[in-house]
Length: 493
Image (tube, rainbow, N blue to C red; front, side):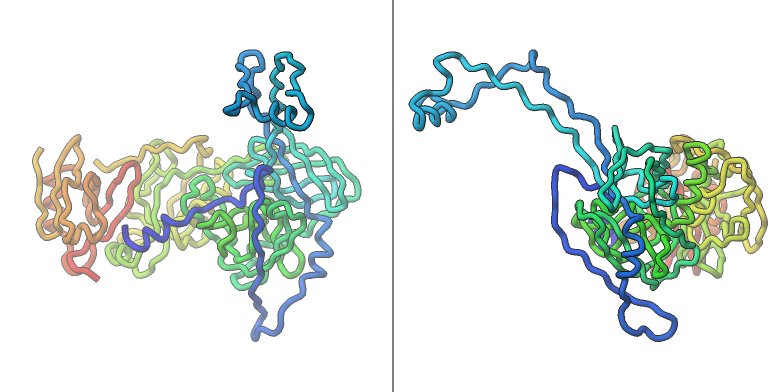
């Protein structure tokens, strides 16, 4: 495994998970950064912001179901361990200090086991409406039997769960209380990297803790989080820890711009990277939760990858941006459309697509039945493809449509190919050859080369004979259930 692979494999993306009642770790928190138009001068004082918003931030306790209790009658009593002298430690204690063994000479009835206390999760939230609506993360109340909300003035209320959205990690709660102070909502679409951000929450149970930092990036897609591919996260360096989940992220105007949700960590605690759900996205979810109790998302069913410099060169594209189509979910709107592997989607309804994650985020904001206008580039031409979105399946299908025994040696690329079940597969790869440098592996299925279909060894031989020798070639492969393009070149960079 190379250094880059080691770097990613050593890190785990974790939700700033609800603080468990079974453990407590004490970690420090820091804040840093500043940005103003022109020169940076001085450091800000957030005390007025915190004072104005503390009453709007709440602590949330989710009571999980009771653990399984042992069967008193069925479980045999286990007598206390005896000492070499024949007495158990309790009998020895009574004999030494009181002159009898404590049993009165009668057999002791084993004590019944104490009830198992329910485990609690705790997190944060904030009031968005004076009527009692509260926003938090869905994972804060995951599996909860009951949910309680504690206000800054000490009042505590049982909360009703109005709705939750697992894919967006958002939950909407409601309490019946008076004199509630809602937050002011900002516009997360106007957030820029380098701007100050302030979080208020309950890390490790320390209520109304304040941390500050800067916006590190916007529109982030999170690796290894396929369930949240629809959320364009705000990345910050604001210290977030277990218990901070669901708390608000403020701008310097005291407006909420996000919901603190996840951290990127090696240690399990804050390592300098935290992620918040943009408030504009969250309020779109809230609108659906209040109306329907659930969220319906549009489904395109296209499999894509981001462009690299080599792949852009192989496809004859002068810009390294857009979502490169590699395959389709069977029966999906994309599979039924005129889209083809090798198409590059550059915009959705006029909004530019810079990388593959942007496509899921744009489409996921639209309801089923929406007609999306995709701007598509292929072979030097731009066209518009209109697709009607279907409802998002409850469980995404893993079946990817493919393009339609003797062995074939492709010596100059270091490949040994074989044909089975009407597919051309990689049988072996020269570890020092161009194919290995491009990332091809045994068992990869070759689907096309420069958009010439390879459904037989004869077709593969024809395609490789006509392959370019001075610039990279775009090869569509399938590995497992995933399809993607690689740039195959005879020359190393």
